[in-house]
Image (cartoon, rainbow, N blue to C red):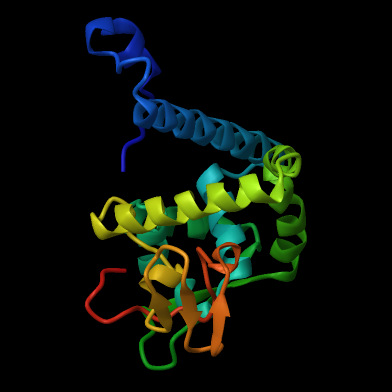
Length: 214
């Protein structure tokens, strides 16, 4: 998906700028700025290590997710790019001995990706790219963070239902989840009630709810 920065739009087209009291537009603009900041942090790490931001994202994903999710087709959906883009990025990472291909025994064209020892060592450094975000979030109260997380979870779920976000492994999309997406949540896999801050956006035990998109 193409990335757009709307700051120029709100400056050049003042007659169509959202009303100063339009809270939704302010929140959207804030999310846009946070996205730009994260990309800038990724680029800083990319320059240091001689790899691209998408290659960093692939390494971090493969290191922290199950093997069955670590393939070209799924990664293309995960990062909303073409398979060709992922394939090119993977080729470089394999050449640099940061990833290795684990080919299917029944189909030599299919393979999953595994992190190498060298790649695992680099991931420890790369995973620190968002440290400024984590440090600033730590200054907010538990109540503020919980409220923000609730809103963020619901927004991601709703955008997934509209196919704006292609992949989601959150509680709301999981077959084990039972609740009203307000304040009562239950996980049938764990056989336990979940408090709002215990909901997950990327659960390793996630299984797609029948009838809902991935």
